[in-house]
Image (tube, rainbow, N blue to C red; front, side, top):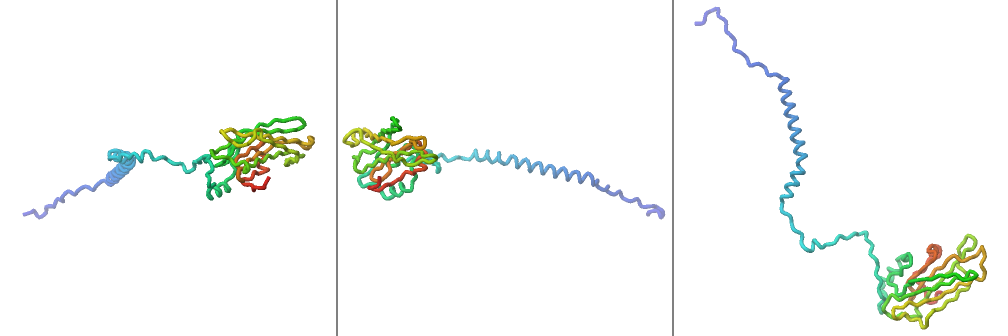
Length: 240
């Protein structure tokens, strides 16, 4: 029996946890998780590259190796071609009509004749002489009656440039004119002004060669004359 006046001793209780220690532990775990995630993000591309490098690659075929890369902005030069007996196709005629003149001294695309040289000399009293060398660009015979060589001289009158009214004479150096053996034909043209004054004087020329009504080749000195006096791409049979 328990004595009447004895007291019961209470059992020891578990000490309460430290809240500061718990919060600190959670913060450290969160920081470690963030650092691990960041490391995985940084290393992911390298791991992917390594894995791709380990995969087998397809060896390109011979046709794939030889496939050229085409630049869509690359301009291709139009080669000279001789005129066929049936004449140019409708597409060629339309294309030529819609194409601007080739700048400079080059022949037009598909030309049968080309100006290869012009020698300019100045005589007495303002006389101007041109020797125009014209060469065939085709193996086919040239039809002489279908050729027209237009030579324009221009004068400065005050502050304006005008087409000259001075007399002009011309002649072929050799006869007959036939364009055989790949030899050029020479046309001599002479400009003979009646008067030369400070208010009216020679400033330049434009030469254009036509064959069967189509422009073949042209030259101008100075070139800016073709801006003020545009050259026709086509002319009529009776046009001078």
